[in-house]
Image 1 (cartoon, rainbow over the protein chains, first blue to last red):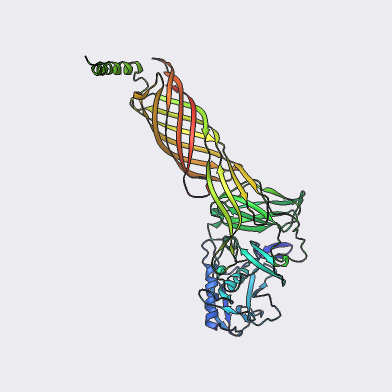
Image 2 (cartoon, rainbow over the protein chains, first blue to last red):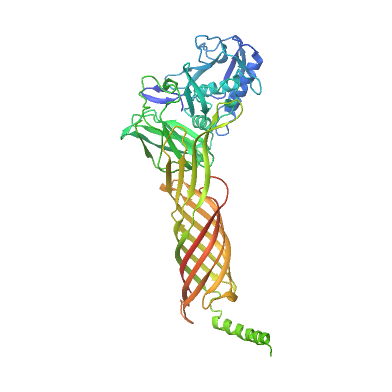
Length: 310
Length: 225
């Protein structure tokens, strides 16, 4: 899902109009056991991960170290550590400066919460969060991507959620400390960045599906719709995002797909939608009854998926 | 004269007689054949929808499991061919069927009800092959033949939205029988033909890249010009 803004009553996806995006590493904040060069190299590897997506055309340039801090509105995109003890469940966050006339991204800063233990080790360190993995997630936001709901969680006895499994780097809750899995983009991430910054042939090589999610014949807003590619096993998701319960999943490899619809119940709704939006989660997961053939450069006929109440 | 000498003499006499009765009038004649049959189904494979488990060492978490099958279907076919010699013939064939592709989706991690997801596809098989006439094995007026060939597979999903291509290879045989023969005129003969073939399909609607094996059984009416 891409972030979007309302521009003159029209929803416009957030994206950089000028690429490569120049970014700076802040020399101000520090974290235990992570030097400034280690920080810069780990973050640069995370940028490379997005830049190397073969079907996308986004790019980045490291512009140097700066004395500026992340979250300063200063016209440059800065990444760095920041000590935020009040945010005891936030590993990192991304902020934007957006041209509210055009929807163009002008600046985006990322901070990593130095309250947590961090690692830039190649293989990860038990008990420490992998900086490159978290940076890869946050840079996904920096390019304009929102959260993916491809994941399973359970509730911790002490509050909050624990990830059981995740199908996207852009899932809102991080894997456990010590894991490096989120250094590698998943098909859902690749589809997202490729849709936002498509290379020349992306649209003609991939296809899309669209339809509606209905509960008792009425549209469902905020349902999570997932397309499963039978041949590759790839999972790509999206949400029903209109008052009519409409969804679109683009960037799908041509082939036969299984469609699964589920409520958004594996993360806080605020990770995906504004509080003002009325998201329905009172229905059961269901599979669409037909196999959906996705063509290259096109779409099969729209279809409705009916869900049943919990 | 011993019994085997009688047998050898009988064979020398009988063979030309049979050949003469059969004739060679079918050689270089165009045969157009049409009929219906059955194309058997096959398992296309199993695929699991997996997520990355939250573990330091790479592990997977299965969200749900699928098993996909292409069902058998009635097929219609049209063949055009000719016998190049008394023994060797060539033919091209267009076969069309509408098999169901059914995927059983089950074992959902969040309890979604198991379901059989079905789609009816249009399946075209266009192949060409060589036939060998086995006169030595004829049974009365039934003339056996064997053959093999290769061709093109085209499977079209519902709504004509997606076309999947592949290749086919086949081996098999059958019998034919002339019902009517004429020495003159445009139509020189008409008869019946039955085929049994084994088809090997690669590509098309598939879950894995492996080749699937199908049986094809057809009954046809042919006209020879």
